[in-house]
Each structure stands twice: as C-alpha cells, then as structure tokens.
Image 1: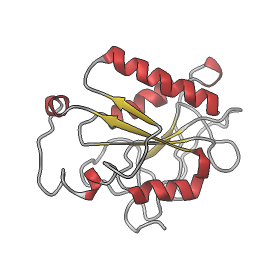
Image 2: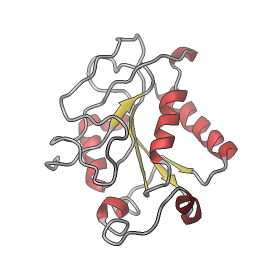
Image 3: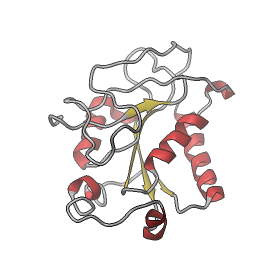
Length: 185
C-alpha cells in the first residue's frame, strides 16, 4: 500500500514513548503551504503534558515505507524512515504521535491501515492573506499539484484549525484538540 520514495515526518509529544506495539493515537496534520502545519504540530507536541508534567525528547512513529519525501521542505523537522527509531526514555504513559505533513488520501489510507482507529486527522487552514504574509506565493506545478490539493476534498477531518494569526483563537482550538487527545489516551 505504501509508495516508494514517499513518507512523512513524524514525531511524538515531548518525551513520550508509545506503549508496547502501535501508538494509541496518531494525529495526521495537513494543510496548504505556509498554513502553519509545522507550527501547529510543534504547538501540539510541546503542549501535551502527560499526567500534567512536561518532559523532553522526541520519538518517531514509523513513516511510510521508502523513506521521507518532501520536495518543498528540507532541513526542517525530524525526518524518519520506516523502521528507524531514535532513543527516547521509556515513560509509563502513552502519547500522541504527530505527523506534520500528510498530503494525499493514500497517505491517510496507509496510516489508517497501519494504525487503525488510533488515527485522527487535523486540517490546518489559513487565509491566502495570512499565507502571503508568511512568504507564500502561488507556484504553478506546486500549489496546484496533488501534493498540495490531494486532501482538499474526500476526507472529513476530525478537527479543522484556523491559523490566520489570531493567537487567542488558535490557543482555543489547540486546547480543544488537546482535551480530546487526553480523553483518547
């Protein structure tokens, strides 16, 4: 089901370790370029506090087979390939695994086949004006390609976060997601 040469960056919440076997929750984030997906992913990771305590460190959830492919991002985030693992202290609690850049329906299908009901989807949206203020400009062949438009339809997201620069509004939305995450874990 996985396609060669494609995968996604994946990290867990701060210092979390999946219990034996598959993670109990995998958050798949998606959104257009400059919508703030990486920022939102990092906010979710840094704000998740198992048992009300913060911890340091990260651990990957395996990405799609064939490694990582992201033509528009290099040197950002933690790239991991299927089967790799980084040392992370074993902690007595589960935590959400965060995949910060899901692009296609086939990506979501792969994660659902691999992790089943543990998968939840988050769409990060930003207005064109907000994206432009972050340095976005339309690039033909990129912004109209499947890698940018593949999840624009055909998927009902568990959460849609609006990241237009209103910090208080984003904070409320993140709080709702984190509350649900705590409930699921």
